[in-house]
Length: 332
Image (cartoon, rainbow, N blue to C red; front, side, top):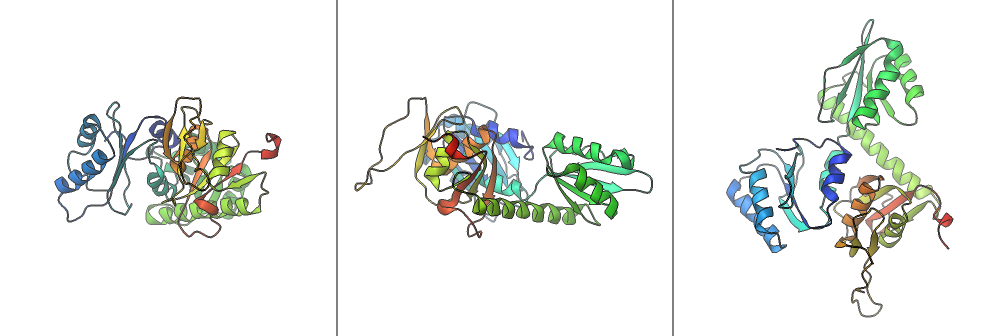
């Protein structure tokens, strides 16, 4: 595999950046169906979507045998396939050959497993390590007074915003004061294994609840809801955080170009339902509105929060965004 685990945001940007179609293959856990039959079914789906033989060969190269764990593969026949192991992910095998790449299932899986910095207090020193980022070097031993600085450096290195502490109230308080508001500090007696995974998962869901509360409490100038308003905010480079349901409800299609702000929704003619085929002036591709929005957010540097269907406070149409500053500043 090229990338055995999802290493970070940069990986996703590289996957969604192409304007041309990409094979997005999500393979579920091992099943009773023989591997050759599973692979043939996936290849059949790709071919029905128009995938060329080079892309099919890339898929065969990426997963020549049963991987033994759920994996996600992105291939386009012209670059080294990107392969990510996603242990614990459930669901059937799915495949599509579309532009942009369909990364929402991978993002939903990764969101439940945020990387973190682990701080363990000893008698006369503290150990600071990282977890869940795909690269986990040995712990750094430091004096108690240096813990905030060492922890912040570790957070920056792996792009994390969670610190899990095994220590006393004083250490927890010092870290919260030093790292707020950039990081969430949680305390646990067992910062490893399933307990660490539980803390990471519950913290991710806390962040989701906070984002939805922010969305509900913001004025229309600072938050948008629905496909059209969200794409408009992305086209104006105003989105700070995109919120989207996975799997998304039907939301039509949209144009997108190479730049993050080059997005435009395709709309239907009133009374006829016919798509208005007035293409924008830039070189473009066409994809589902949700995938186009996710690509725009990732390429443009905005964060993306994936919501489960039925989550209380979900925006209308399954998509919305928190804005960097009021939209009225740029609207006529």
